[in-house]
Image (cartoon, rainbow, N blue to C red; front, side, top):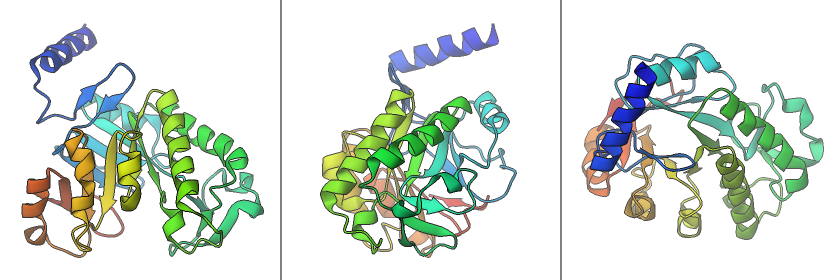
Length: 261
């Protein structure tokens, strides 16, 4: 009965257009977060601090069990599944399934190497299995990381067209499983990809004077989840509010600590 009452209340709020302060809206197939939605991003630490009073959590898909997602849902939160889809991580349980032929240069983080995203016949089933894991754990959305390899020294001659093709492949795999999907960084391709993704996740656009490039998402009534690591909120929150970004300061380890706008 409680679940039925909650669904009925959510329907009434949706019909009344009261989504601005919440986590967004649910379409026929998946969740759609709206601009300005507050969030928490915690990727380090085995235990997630569920006490942060925000409607959206972004947590590690491999490290966190279904029980954590369920507990957050009980509090009315939406939960995003963090995955690396453009880089290999040597500590993941499926690391040995990636052939050496698709492993490129290091991406600057210990134990990580860029993937040859042109090799979709190899990568698609591996990524589909990871996204299936997110779905089975009950996540509402996926944050696929390292989605801009073509702009980096990967060890492969990646072109913009390769990145567009791969990013759209990942978006399709997520949508087919009934979840929302976010575009991580990849600012230059936002005009081509905003229609394929439900929200954006960005790091340090204020520090590099790039936040204006995210306007296509907010103009489409889609959230932009944004963090800065080296700037205090006093340096970016005014612009974030103007652009309707969901902004906060975090430490690089992405633990519990946060300072939100």
